Amino acid sequence: MKHLTAIILTLILIVYLLIHGTSRAFELKSIIEVPYKFLNASEKKEIDCLADNIYYEAGYEPEEGKVAVAAVTMNRVKSNRFDSTVCGVVTQKTQGTCQFTWICDGSKNRRPNPDMYEQARQIALYVYFNHSVIEDVTKGAIYYHADYVSPGWNNLKKTTKIGRHIFYIDPKVNINYASKT
Image 1 (cartoon, rainbow, N blue to C red):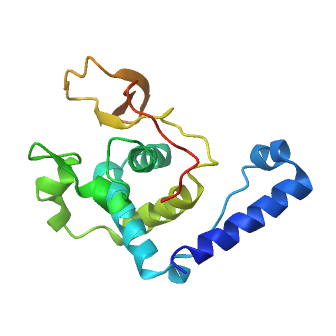
Image 2 (cartoon, rainbow, N blue to C red):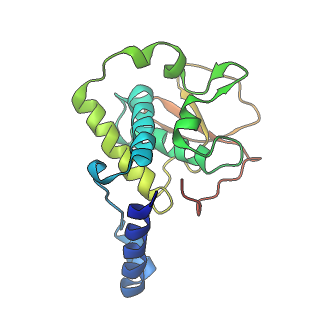
């Protein structure tokens, strides 16, 4: 029952693909839309963690920048290096350092702008349920930083810059796009 909604929507997508063909479906950007109110408690928690990460990391970035932060979060979930849940990825620390600045710098104590947060939640729903079928604007990135810092990530390969963030892949990390959270 945990992911019953996602399973049903996936089956609908499969039937659609069988009827209309895969190239046409992906060309039209067939996506799954799941209203927040229909999610179970576990799914709501994951969406809330993803929305928080989008809001506090890219709240005032263009929409593509918000989608990019969500994609990095989901890429980490599907990688072999990070936690297998969104909330685990968002709150993860490495050697005492937060992976996402807002977790440790007090930003999460700020009351979010309701309209901006709702936009972050809608993007979270979209990316969470469609990550395996939508274009990854980060090109598989699992790391990023603001363009005004220089972390010295020599072992990583830059993939793109979106808004104020620069995105990177780690050639040693595999991302399993077929897996689902």
